[in-house]
Amino acid sequence: MTLSLNGLLPIPLQEQHSRRKSGVWLQSLNLEQGDTVLLLAPSGTGKTTLLHILYGIRDDYEGDAAWDHTTVKTMSPESLATLRAKQVSIVFQDLRLFPRLTVLENLELKRSLTDTISREEMMTWLTRLGISNKQHAAIHTLSYGEQQRVAIIRSLLQPFRWLLMDEPFSHLDPDNTRIATTLIQEVTAGNKAGLLLAALDENRYFDYSKTISL
Amino acid sequence: MNGQYTRTILKKLLLQHSGKSRLVFAWLSLWTGICLLLLSVAAWWNLRLIMHGKSSKDSLGSTFITISKFVTPENVTGTHAFTTEEIQSLLQTPQVQDAGALTPATFPAAISIGGALGFSTLLPLESVPDRFIDAATGNWHWEEGMMEVPIILSSELLNQYNYVFAPSQGLPLLTEDAVKALTFRLEIGTMRESYIGRVAGLSDRITSVLVPESFIRYGNTRHGNDRKVRPSRLILKTADPSDQTFTQYLEARNYKVNAEQLRWNKLRAAVQFISLAMGMLAVALTGISALVFLMFIELTLTRAREAMQLLLQTGYSPAYLRRFVTQRFVPLLLSAVLTAVIPVMLIQVFFHSYMHRQGIETGWLPGWPVWAITATCLFLILWLVRCTIRKAVG
Image (tube, rainbow over all chains, first blue to last red; front, top):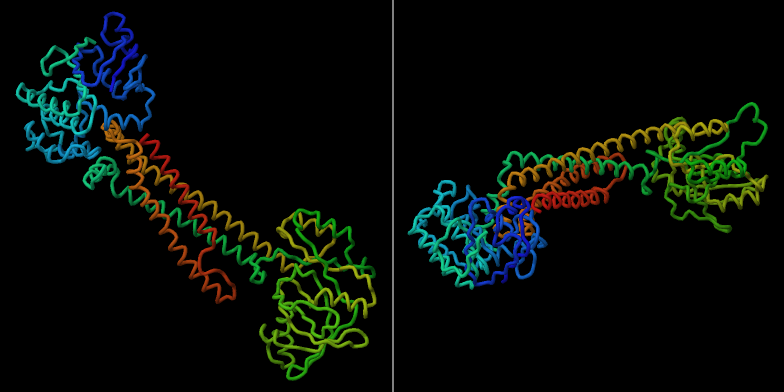
């Protein structure tokens, strides 16, 4: 599954863009499935905006973003649902979990969509990331780091060809980050998927095949 | 997608934001509105059956009237017959749908009954086109050579006999069935040509003694003193004989109408107006109750908007979410509409047995318009519910 960007520029960034050069905005760019891409972006340069555009959440931009030559902007709500359930997964910067639901309920909502990961495997991942004891706790009672781990597991509970991550380890300590990256690598490899990680700074979480400055 | 567990989670996220009391209120509101509407439709249909039903006599609301010309000192020596132009003029008024002549016999006719009832009397015979006859008309046929002549008597004539004539003469009272079982000798003309008379029915519509048109034609030709008889009475089928313009039209031409018939017609018009007003009120109430129900759905979904957006971002399809929400609200709608029919059915059964005791026939079950309105309400509200959900989910 190829991700193509062509002359893409969010309308809110038009004025700001004229003052600095970008490796993404107004460029022509193709990323192939299997690539591991680090998107380096200082605050306020639009990395969250880019991920939301790719995921079909916002459409206030000029130019094109396309998955396998299908432009995101022209996708119907049903096509977007299929894209999100089976082809592109995401870890949002603001996590977007259901705060009143428990950890298990949040995960089960995602897992039961496609039922490609068994409940037992999901429980193993909870254990690996050290939050199995929190499975019946409501999300709003968890620390941000714990919530981040729930969001990471949720993003892996579906088939995907690309995994988009927006500062996914910002509140994790080095040990938990290492455990999380190992799990992500395993599942991404299992899916033969591409990975796009947006971060503020250089990092070595993964063995990146491309680094792009926003 | 599978699992009761997931559906429970979705229910928690999407459908539990409005509270049970609001749900009960919305359901009751819809139920009451639909029930009132169906009751008013049932009432309207029953009135219509009673007033226009072909199976029953139409004394409760006949739109048929009989007219003649007033006898005044000026025309006392002239004719009271209607001319062809006058009949055409009547037919051109918007209220008159059909007109028929009551053709009188121009020959003498007398009946006589032997036995306990033994009496003999002269009778003024008339005929009217068959389409104006409201009484049972089995064997309503006569042709030359037939000895038996069917006769339709006015119900009023039977009343006169039972309440005035019989008590004064010490004669037994007669029921409708007893009258129909009677046969009597009918003699016509100066040569007293003899036939057997049989009562074929009793009419509320026409105050006369009716025989088939063929018998009047035969009698007038053979025994009558005027072969070209012009009608002096007309029977009119009208849309609303109590209409003021029509009444003025009749008065201006010095036409006389049975006052009793007009009173009934005014009452019928009043009942129809009340029925229409009730119907409009019921439609308005149903509209409001449906609106309350739809607003309950809208409120529930508005409160779940964030969760809905997040579910869409998680990968749930709009179609699945719409289906899930629809499956929760449609049973409420179905139960409200279908159970609203129950009291209407019970009231109809009660009404039927009450009216049956009064000698008026209605159906045991609500008429087809009640079922048609039930189905229409169901589909209309279902469509509105789908629109509301589509608007909320996307």
